[in-house]
Image (cartoon, rainbow, N blue to C red; front, side, top):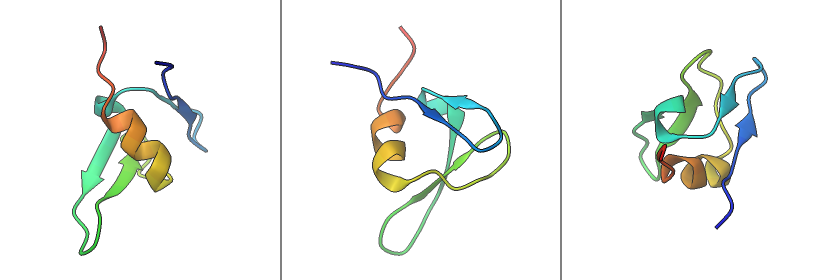
Length: 54
């Protein structure tokens, strides 16, 4: 399985769950970059949120 990575607009590389901040939403959670608080696209965030460092 390949790892999903995402580069935030602030330049942070989001690769693991701890790189994201979860905010509860009514229908679905919203994920944000822990460095700057920019929202991360839902599909990418869900994949990244399940990844843990080895």
